[in-house]
Image (cartoon, rainbow, N blue to C red; front, side, top):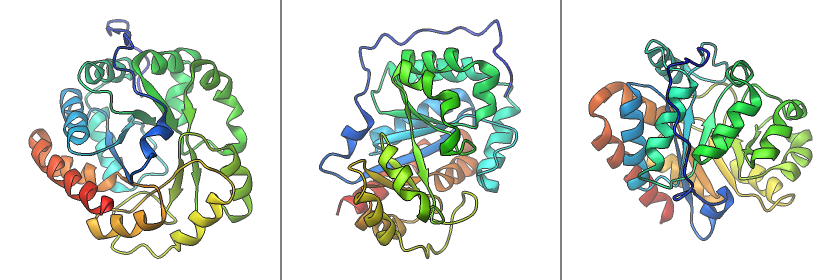
Length: 275
């Protein structure tokens, strides 16, 4: 990720449409969370696609900050990040896109990011702008829970939630992770990197049950979910589902013309997890 360009224009969020607490979206419904990579195929389209998904039923949207070494991502999202980075966008450009979205929608937004872009930009500056633009939380897959203190003073200062990830291999650590979780627990459905999977074999029900014994924080399942059937199965036990690579695949296929396909896909998934 490039450093901030001095020519970038930043418009502070005026707060008029500021969304509420992340946990509130889970009240009395199954939640659909979607992901897209900022700048793929362009930042203008990123804004459009966020709005299209929000209007079609996405309850929260993760915005991926492009990074050159996304270790938790499979090929689909890696390729999206490569395409976005080729546009030479920086963090100020992404914040400006969020400001534009906020003029039209109060859909809760979180950043999915790696630690290096935040460190390069400056933690205090980054999290202040998150607060100013209505970003509610961050997911940092390369930051172990035990190392959250590196950014926690800043997230606490500006009211930004660090989303806790729990993997199938986290069994001995679930107690610690779940009790500290805020916003929602991001339960990783499968081992490995992100990507569409034909089958998800992890016993999600058992892990969700263990987590819910320890916390009232909602649990959303992600990594590998792509079909309506998979989403419905995961939503039986969890409070929500997270879909990333399948959304990014639609954008990769339809590029500048993906809005209609995204709306149809999101609408289908939302409908089936609610029934």
